[in-house]
Amino acid sequence: MNRSRILAGLGEVASGGEANRADIVVIGMTGLIRYVAAAHPGEFLSAPDLHPTAGLVATLARVDPVTHESLGSQLVRATASAATTAVTTGMPIPVTSMSHIGAADTWNGFPSWSPDGRTIACTTLRPCASIEAGARVEQPEIAILSTSPA
Image (tube, rainbow, N blue to C red; front, side):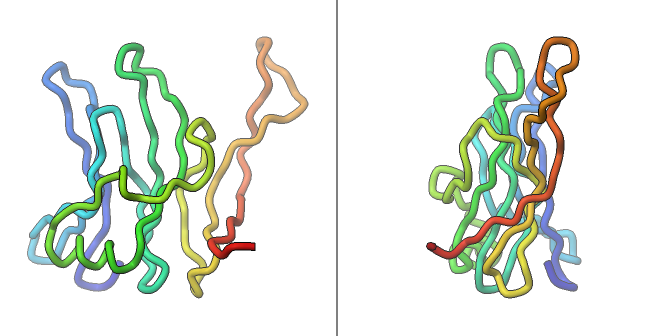
């Protein structure tokens, strides 16, 4: 983020030893931890990237509460002002108030802002023509997403 702070995902483990959720925190060089974005149980925020004018973007993965199967991941975004307020005050941005980029059942992840904040590069899985064990093979690729209306 900058020389005095680090953005990271911070997981919470349930009493049974399984991961329950993961929030985004900023860790100051003094060790002070402030929550920036808060997930609900079964939601996992990771790979945050903060742009000074475009805002915060991160990966949001969801897990089925009964089967613990992954339900996919998508990108979420908060405005620069919301992110700055959260970093400054430690009052986290709820996932419900963040913009969702892409469908919830896609496999987008590891977002990174362009220097001008107009596009986001991320990884995504694309089904290809190959079939293994009766299922289509998912091929990872890099996607570039515009954040400006067309």
